[in-house]
Length: 110
Image (tube, rainbow, N blue to C red; front, side):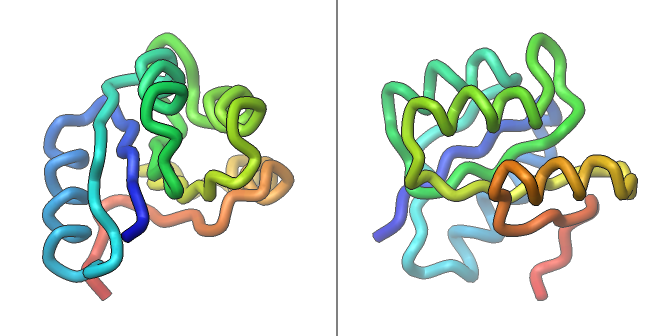
């Protein structure tokens, strides 16, 4: 079973991702949620998840900086970015940080 941390400032998005994981991803379990990057760092240190699904634009600490700092705690954690912004610059930076996927909101089950 792989552990998942969801980091997003939108409550509805977090809930939707959790439902998708619970319904379709049988080998994944959501072990925590955070409302912003700073809270995400705290949860990451506490939970050491296998996968973090994060937004890019969040208050307190944006997703890219969050990923940089979270990777310093645990190099083996994988990241998926979920964003409402289809900007190549974000995707390019995300790839440099080793992000495994970049999904646009709204997320579709397939």
